[in-house]
Image 1 (cartoon, helix red, strand yellow):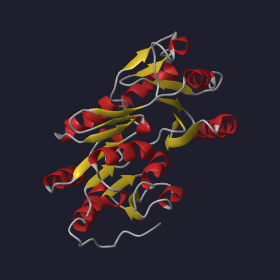
Image 2 (tube, helix red, strand yellow):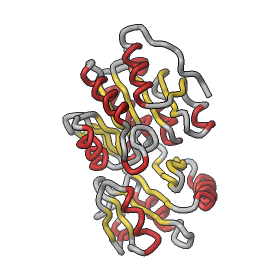
Image 3 (cartoon, helix red, strand yellow):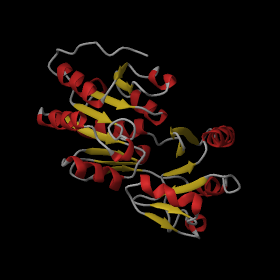
Image 4 (cartoon, helix red, strand yellow):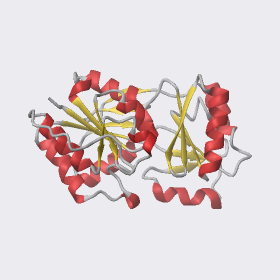
Length: 272
């Protein structure tokens, strides 16, 4: 029986322009009305996930900043974790000489050391405040606590940086492409998977009672927490290979979960 549905946001439930398809919207509500628990798991911050909840007019569990924070549907924080100070200070300056934007992620806002032509446009895609803190690097570990750091820019530059970071810090971090212009870096012990496991344990829900849906490489750790993982059909082939099933929409995956919860699941979603 399925008891918990976990959905990524960007590229999965949340489309370009922060749009949610009406069919997906109705499916999430149907899942809740049917007695299933729902969680949104995202690289976005908790205030941004709450913004999506507000758009949908519902309260659900949340795994935010790729697992750095986990909140229950009643807004109770059950897990939080951050970078070690020495490590985040090194990561904060590693791309300063590159044509990339470094974004430090506090619990409820984004931090830039300056606002210029390259960085000004990023605010359009964010649903949490952006604060300019010229002394941000010096403030790390005290005034500024980070659970995630993000680099934005050209994909080729990001891939080069990803390779360099993994070569230098591979035993301390995970670095993965989270969007077409976004490289997310997390402490190795933080992931959507560890965040979801914390939520499952808190709720008393087993891996086989969980369905998760995603479209990016930061969802792979989440896929590993359950035998019922769905990759979006438009996602990267390597990502699809990590999932148990492929789905065209959140609504289709939710429908499978509802049928599975009554023992009538069908297998039309295949591997890709």
